[in-house]
Image (cartoon, rainbow, N blue to C red):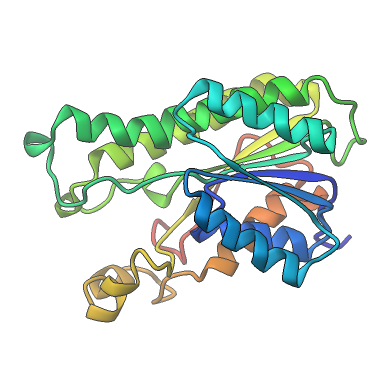
Length: 263
């Protein structure tokens, strides 16, 4: 069996980083249509142009969505289903890092809440809306079921970061994503819906590229047995595996893709 996906994929945080890379990977491995969501409409337009140029056969819908807003998320589901009829795969990758370096005694409630709203509540709102839709769909068979959901957590969703990092809201939210994933995976497996989380380690993205170039993260890479960050394609390939029938008996897992950091 090859690692192939078909049908419609719904991706939050699709304007950049892991979400964007996942859209490209899905398009390159058989997906028929993509619903790409983000708050940044201009960047979504750019991603759409990239995909149309490389994969003209793939249907693409872009939707400006605030994942912290219940109505915004629900309307995105409705628009996706109105155009494509189904949602077979959902990848919830919208997230922010917050204000690194801020310890709990220095943290404002507003700083805490912003990270929790996007990284935790945003995932739950998206997952709830997708589950509601998937429950209305017919199963595509034992290997594909009614649908697959992949939630983006972090290696710091299964372990704690160095104390100096000051990312308590981020760590709390990413742990919660794993809990949300595991809880709902047990509930909806009987309905043919598989739910898993992916927990990346350090990833070479534009966000941390300056730190990589300055050597700020060298100590962290020294703690990583593979000695480097992942590239975006490696994380997207891992998401592809979880989305594909090749992982049809994986349910409620938190797949750690961190080069051995948490081993």
